[in-house]
Structures are given as structure tokens and as C-alpha cells.
Image (cartoon, rainbow, N blue to C red):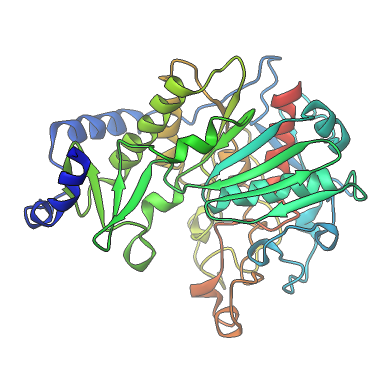
Length: 388
């Protein structure tokens, strides 16, 4: 009854919205966290074998890619760069080499045998879907004759390797926390997971991600109001909102997931490449594009220095995960992905019409990634941390 009362009372609450950037004590406290974290260097993580998996270099390797897009049954047009006319292919022939070790070669048959009868679920936004489809392609390349089943739905889509009883799922939840519609208004509830979590509990491996949707403005913004502490806001500090939302997710995981049965991962913030000044040392003379369009080679790695501006969202993610009772494994792909300005769909996305392709300055997709491509490396790291 309290919930129904709050829903019917919403119009009156909205009349008294405070259109400021969250002056409450909690958000001021979160801002203090961000100011402190801003002084820290990017976090460097290593697995239990003391191999710094997420620090290293990209090396050319003609044994890549691990599959061909034409042979994978699931790639969305948004990620299918070859199908939609990308002319170059060097971006496909890079392998991630960690600083002091080599990654094991991905083995799709081994993955299926290790996960026989189990479910892997990716939860998050379209970058999580990017990784989900990549993993399916990588496995399918090893067993192209096996029986499969694809069921697309909203919010849950599943791909099953029937001969092995393995299910690879994607659950769309771009904020991880609850968003619902009340009297035509989208309410992002920063302190609730609610029904989303019911579908997550049964998975044997969970991989979460969020990030990009928290920054969307204007027509791309996915909510009309945020709810925090029983109050409604038209806007607030976006990092503070992200932190509150991820803390809600972290508390849900700590309270609802048995870490002895279910392995939990969190995909680091995937960087975008919309500002060529970040990889041209501030030199603008002679630049012909304003984003990733036309980029065909990675940024040259310079040790542990992050190329460009390190995402503040990543500092928040790292801090919240460190505070969990049973921390998720942070698949820290942010730095290694930042070097790959060449790996985005750009104008070679099936989501763009001819007019948009003709105007790359405004239409190029520099957030998602081509398949085959960079998410395959995310999954090589996922495979390594899962089984080695």
C-alpha cells in the first residue's frame, strides 16, 4: 500500500522538485569521494598468478581474428562492420600481450566442457550485449556443427549450445538499478534493484556492466526523474548518481549471490573515442576528423600511462567494488581498450542510414566495437580469469 500511495502521490511530489544539482548531505559526501579519487592514478589489477593481465601492449598477430563475422549466427548490424562496408582489416589482427605473461589461447570446446549444464549471463547495456555476442561467436567457431537455439526477448535474450547444455544469456539493464514508468514518466530508482534480480540469481557466472547511459543528455537520456531517499530529482551530479546506483547493485550482490556457487564479474568502463586531441597530443592542425572515423591503427602504448583522460566513472566503479563484502572480479579493460581508437564501427554500422554515413562528424559510432574485434579480447581475459 505504501508503494501505491507513493505512486499516486508522485504528481504532487514532482511539483516540489528541487531543480538543483543535489545539495543533500549524501551527495555532497559522494562529491567529496570523487574529489579525493581524482588525485589517484588509474588502478592496476592482477590475477592470482601475479600476471598483470590488464597492463601491456597490442601486438600484430596474423592468426587473428578468432572467427569471421559471416560465420557467426548472432552479430547485430550495429557491430557487423564488415557487412556494412568497412574496407580495412588490419584492426582485426591485433592480440593483447600483458606485461609479463601471455594469455592462453581461447578454446571454445574447453569453455563448453567446463561450463557444461551451466548458464553464463551478461547484464547491462549495449556494451554488455557487444561482449555477449562476441563470446557466442568465439565458442561457435569451435563447434560450428553443434545444435544451437537463439531466443531474443526483452529484457532477456538467450543462446543455447544444446549438445552441451550451456546457456549464454544477455539481460538488458543499462543502469543495473530499477527504472519504471509512472503516469508516463520514467523514474530511475537509485536504491532499488527489484524484479531485475530475480532473473540473475539462477546464473552460474554473472558479468555486469554499466556506465555510458548515466551520462546521456537530452533525447538520449533514459529517464525523466531520479528517485533517491524518497525524493525526486530532474537531475543531479551524474557521478554521484552512478555511485549510488552501483552501491545499490553491490549491496544486492552481497545479499543475494552465493559466492561459493556463482562467480561475479564486472566489466570496466568501456572508453569512447570522440576527441582526437586525446591521441594527437593536443595538435589540431591537419586533423581531418573529429572522432574515430578514419582511424585504422591503435594508439601506441607507452607503458602504464593512460592515453587521454582517465574515465572518472572507472574510479567510482573501482571504489565501490573494493568496498563489497564479496568483491566482484573487476575485468579492468578500460586502459587496454583506450588504445583501440581503430576498433569502433564508426560509419560502418547497420544502425546508420546512408545520410548518416555521409556525415561521420555527427554520426560515427565511437562507443561500440566491431565484431570480430576488441570485445574478443575482453572475452579472452574473461576466459583466462574464469578457468586459469
